[in-house]
Length: 296
Image (tube, rainbow, N blue to C red; front, side, top):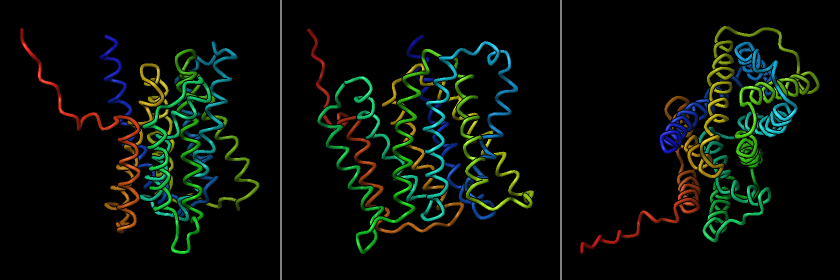
């Protein structure tokens, strides 16, 4: 039964990765009509409101432990989306998606800081390879890191911290309460930042409204709730492995839907990061020949 739950958790996380991959494209499209913090405020307000309506009984029984978990996870999620949304104004969907996938190599190190369990040699080596790939993607010809790529890297750090935080809290709290609190905190912080830093929104176009609803419900509320539930049955590192496939989905959708170009530099950088991801988690064990079983 436990194995079945792990399998269902993995399948659910693959679905989350695909939805988040499509979220890169939706966010990029929304930025043509609305400023970043208003987009974030809208998506998190929609997500928190709808989920709260379906979780009233659970919210009435919420404990301090549930709320604390939601606040911790929520602050990491907020910074993740700030860096992602603002960064997308200065880089392509494909480049950002693969830079953010670097979080998979960071997760074991943050988990080590939390549990004192040191990562192995493969993880450390993969981290350096991964940063090399990020550098290939990020550095301009004059060896300066682009602003969008730098923000995307900060997003990867925030994603790693969010995954570790969910893995730490999810098994011991009500994940519905955790999710409502994390969305609500992100919504409040986003709206405050929008009022301070951005001009007021005069009107919302009908096409933009549907994009915001998609971001709020299908790219925020549902996938984060699924992630919070799925991490009850799997580890933070395993979660990071599966969720890293959102980079693949995001890049492909960026090419297919937005018509973004694929350069040699992009391919080399993405391949380097992808190899680091594979090395850190499989140690290329699948390349070793299997020992033939002997019969007595």
